[in-house]
Length: 274
Image 1: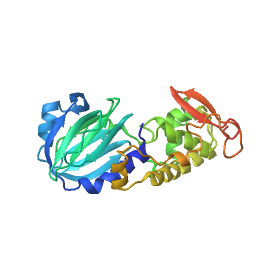
Image 2 (image 1 turned 90 degrees about the vertical axis):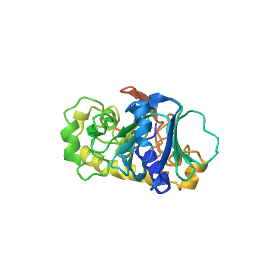
Image 3 (image 1 turned 30 degrees about the horizontal axis):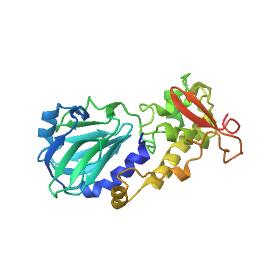
């Protein structure tokens, strides 16, 4: 599932190409991907609109439109946005395609069909996407030890589950929660209420640093993004624990363990992380 670094990489790659481009037509191959409004109104509302700016909130892409409306996209597990040249064959699992005024198509591709698109009209309150319930971004100065301790410090939930809770911090998923907790040497299954003040301080410092590191490693140019069909993420060489169960911890050499925590597979070092 794309997390904040991957979504940000997509935003950076596409932003300059979409700015000022006008939507001339909309095709939905799978009406279910348009979460709101219903398919016909969704298509009608986008036709004739131009992209003003492509932003991001947590794992959401948010395209500002020239009339003040917004197109929100959540990729979920397998979603991608591709900008295809005129006449280029459609990718398998293309759920929606926006024909642009330069002849290209912006295509929403999603093998698992979990991704969703929302069209928010000018001035419309967003009570649909879930963005209103998101916590601070990882680089928000408000995300300090006091904040984390205040929202999680009395919880008996695993600390990893707290990091995955988008109402606590926006944009962290299974990959980077493992990496953050290894960085601060905290076991992912520790009850959040068991962390002391120093551990909250370390966690608050590591969250923006680790997320910034992987965001920078994931960045690609538009041409690189286009050539890889949005599938090339550059985090793999830098991952220290995620998907490395059984391999040696790069700090102490102990074999990394995998456990299911809160329904999610988690990898950690049983010696370094306490």
